[in-house]
Image 1 (spheres, rainbow, N blue to C red):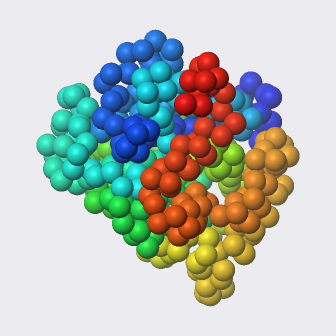
Image 2: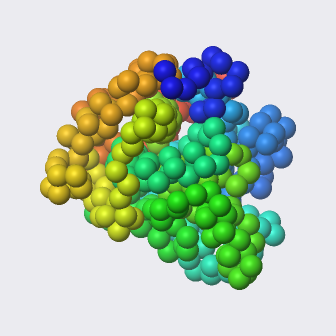
Image 3: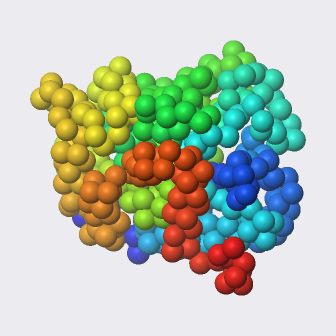
Length: 385
């Protein structure tokens, strides 16, 4: 083993997960701009683990620092249960999906906070349209230089992770033809997508400083790449994923992120590496992932050939085989076989719509799947109402 196992106090590759939930009116199935009415009560329970987002129909939660994916699972179950119960007491529900199937961004209220008003003032319509919901996975790093070196290699796997997470096929009542339309909406923002290759952490710092000095940004948190060194937490943060609808899907994605980073680190310690590709090539695969999901093909750049996406997902599973037992994440990453068989949330949403021609049925499905297996702090009759 080339890294300390999770039980060791100096284990560097800790986990954190952030999720952005939709607040839903169960009668209309529309998004409900309601975060300002529940934030005070929610923060009494969850404190800094719950916070508002730019649109009032979004609530964001973040786990504590976890050593294993099973600790992360416990945290996600607790957080979904707390937010779901809080919403239910207000006659509302929550759902996890990269976009709402039919609610319009034009009807959403902006959270009254100086930060969000500043974003809207700068980004204008692009900010107002940003009615999307993601999942961010943080993995602790041994040091800043290792963080950059792992980032350079791990960029290649961002389309794979996006493909496994797709949950946003609909936008404002339309079947977009994409499995992750959230990815398309987010391209309207600057400093998004696959990052460039950086030779050192100091080179990355120089980039950030240049943007600050030229008044492009006021802090490094306004770099919204699919994969970025977090400026405060000392983590490498993956931001490419649509929010996972089911808890098992979320934990699978977190497990893969952690395992990929640890596998790359292990290769470094063996004086080996994985080929680093230009962002223009990786973007070809990212577009395919967003458009076609698991039914599409990705490019194997080493072979210079396109291959069925499901075959490359199995290669990804094999890539992390020698680290998952040490990390205690074999069961979590093996959920990939269920996803490959049953499809992602986007596949299930599209199937429901094909069978019912009813987007409210899709919303009902999302509400059920979001809280599947999640303990609720409510009387039984209220939890099922």
